[in-house]
Length: 344
Figure 1: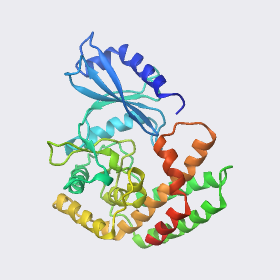
Figure 2 (figure 1 turned 60 degrees about the vertical axis):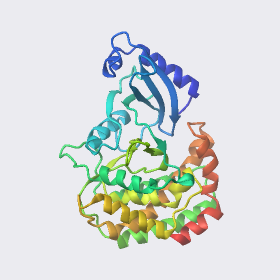
Figure 3 (figure 1 turned 90 degrees about the horizontal axis):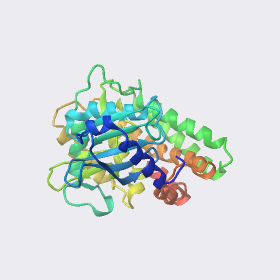
């Protein structure tokens, strides 16, 4: 995404000031005042807190899409539909307004309800935090999937994600930023993942709403709730619950937001907490046979993302974050990759 945060703030404020339909959607009235405050930005969206008619009025989140995800034509519409699909879980924001027209800033705008709470912090875990995250995911995964649910449903989510990783590596190898040292690691991780996929067998074919990006920063844990919310729905699919669990537990995920790595015993403990929270609402299916392969592909996905990011951030001046700038060199270092390959 090109442009400064200040420019995005100005564009978003101009947009809401002139949008009567948005004011009506959030209950602000024909002459209501919508105030925006920067909330945070990622690779794909810039987020704002939006208050209608003063500080004591309801608060919403306005998301401006700046870089679409793959496999769908309209990011904000896809996120809106995902929030509608997962709404019965009670563990996600509710969609309020969507605009993918040419008048919207960026690639479109989504407004959703605001969910208060502290972000999960692996470096400062509080008693019960992981159990709450297990319950959040269990409630989301147990949400019934409507026959007309518009979310992407791969025939084999594991192989599709693996193929996406291979494509990112292909682009990286063809670029001016390709490094023989990194490519050697890529070959080793790909061989390991491919062997695990072959051993995993087939998916059981029972779809669940799967977020696919279960980062710690996406879990909000309020003090007055026994579980909490999951608040980022950029890339959900209909797939296997093992994908969300493996991504959450993978060292490449926890290290992105912290210095924490799950010991093997804690991985087993978390999975037990998760299945207790599921409480028979759905069967494990092929989970046990495929979880290990999902863990390996989750790690591969992180390495592939970092490789492609070298091109995007190094050459084009596109949107990045300070976290990405700090973490990517660490992720692609021998000191990080060697024990990671041995561990998997």
